[in-house]
Amino acid sequence: MTRTSITALVPWTLVALVVPALAMPALADAAPLPTATEVARKAREKGPLTLLAAAEVKLAGSQKAAAGLPPLTNPYLEVFVDRSKDTSGVAAVQANLWLPIELAGQRDKRVAEVDGLVAWKKTARAAAAAAAVGEAVTAWGELAIALARRKEALAGEKVAREESTYVKGRLEAKDATAVDAAVAEGEVARWVQSKVEADITVSTAKARLSIAIGEPTLEAPDDAPVIELPALPWKDDAALVAKLDASSPVLLAAEQEATFFLASKDRWESEKYTPVNFILSAGRTDLGAFKYGVGLSWSFPVLRKNQAEIARADAEADRAKAAKIIATTALHARAKGAFAAYTAARTALVTVDTLALPAAQAVVDASVAAWKAGKLEATRVFLARRDLATARARRLDVAAIGYRAYGELAGLIGEVP
Image 1 (cartoon, helix red, strand yellow):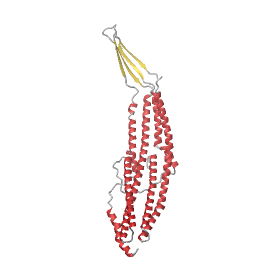
Image 2: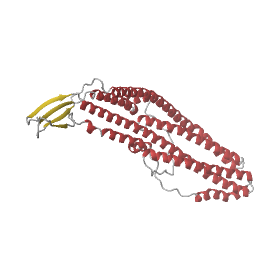
Image 3: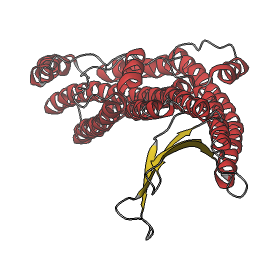
Image 4: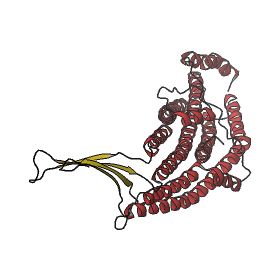
């Protein structure tokens, strides 16, 4: 390139730098993306799963009033009036007042059953809250990655427009070819398409996060947060598994469910003994004489002993115990898988940030310098930029895997790791 041609390009270089900046619309002020901890708190308080589980706890507690009623049940009265052909104007009258009283400890068994149900629903609520946290943190990670992809697309489009303008200036100065200009415009179009795709991903990710935290008016910020994977608090997956065995809300809920059905079995066992009826009887004979008496009645549990209900409760307890064993196996597998995926993604990010991205950026810088010095074709610059964009996109792919594993871990323990 001659000195004259370079001088002629100076105005076009200024245009390439100034015009796109003036053409870009000002970004509206928007709240930053909530942190993972804030998202977890909102999901624990207002997540759909949490709210439904809280309603289940309230529903279970509503049975306490009936369970705690005294052993004396509703009395009932029967009255008989008899007349005889041997009497006239006088009728025999007898009234019996029945007072059923539960003497087999049914009240205590009912209270124990309801207490077991409430305890089960409370642990189930904790398990639901943990699942809500996992869903919210996963959605938060998806939105963070989507925002980062949109930021990359905006930055790429800005650079592509600047270089397209620069190439057009060189074309007018007879220092570039029509092919170079066409390729430059193609790069602009490619980044525009990437931005549109990123906008769609941001919208869907925002909707998922809005549902997860119960905030339909959530607005996605214009800027992207820093994409990084923090260190986990466990030295290895064995430490994580040990924590889950001790405090996993899913395992606690399965254990409490079995306890409830055993209490239900005890309640059905007690209720095979019907209440004892104390009978107070009073009346008069057909001769007008007053009479009274007392009595008892009781049904012997010989043929009907709640056999089906007792067997059902016993089987449900066995099912809950089996469910805990299955849940434990699945929990261990999920924990180890998520821990391994997160650790691998975090290690990969370090490699990308220290080796891949600096190397790709160095190629771009050298290519641009050589191109502007007239020692390299424009297409080589565009290829170098594509390689850099690919490296950054792959970094976000790795980070997305890490964020999914992060959400899985949060769902297992019920909080942000």
